[in-house]
Image (tube, rainbow, N blue to C red):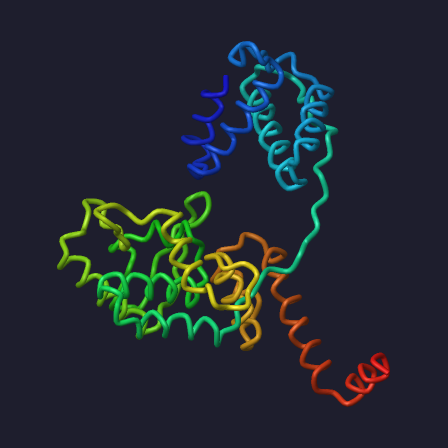
Length: 304
């Protein structure tokens, strides 16, 4: 049953490999809880809402966060929805099961000056081999200058780059493609990296832009490059996604229309992009608190 469902996600809904593996893990975990002796014998047709609630309560006691529990519910909902669509069941036991509420903290941002300093530090590192230097700089430049996701960066192939028009074709979630403009200086760095890569005979048959040791760059390798480069910054999270957040905030603070930023980021809904307007508002509040005489007076009164 699980394999048939995962094949449906993979071939019909075109879900990302990481999503499919996460669903597989959640379903196998559920089966082990329902039937510890033989998880393969779980009959999903007989699963009830009480079964799922008891499992979620057990997972919560073991330390699963509301976000993790939410994903597990969505996974099971998707399974039962597929079973209904396939005529296996007529009613989902999870119809009335609510999703855990999540807090919505503002994304972590990295100051533009810190990002520029991180890139400059790599460029000026004489101990770093030329190939490694070009790779690390380009990874940071693309993530921050274009605001693309880590998976989107990994998926870039040479044929996705148009040097004549200064554009990059990006393949996002659910294989949706979009075109983003690329600054000339960044295009020059891409060409420089390609020359170094090809000189080392690192190119592969499927033409990935980024190659390390004869293989397409991996998510962990991208994360490590970014995390190490941003090590001296004040940001709490030093990740590829933090660079995406920083891109969006910089665009809005620079006067870009929110709908343009949405298109750039590949968000399906404007509501997803609107969180960055809150970031911009926070920056305004900070500037006011640090500069306006009335705000300064209030601060002094509180201290006295």
